[in-house]
Amino acid sequence: MPVINHVDLTIEAGQHVALLGKTGCGKSTLLQLVNRAFDPSQGVITLNHLSLADYDEATLRSMMSVVPQRVHVFSHTLRGELNYGKRRCDR
Image (tube, rainbow, N blue to C red; front, side, top):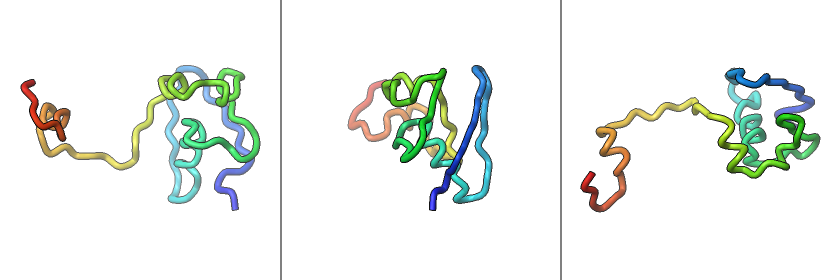
């Protein structure tokens, strides 16, 4: 059974959109489709009247931001977090 079926959504330039809903309603699936993590099995998704398939992924992803629903609380300083995993760091 499809999670998302027959969706028509228009977002105007400069508009900010939040996806809200219960678990399993398709928020993450819609986000993955818009980010081209995978392509729709039916239909087409367009941006500025062009199919998302016509955009290279780097260009497409540079045009949007995603705020995850799970927040990471940092346990170190900003320097410590940025340098996490490096063997030696002088700065």
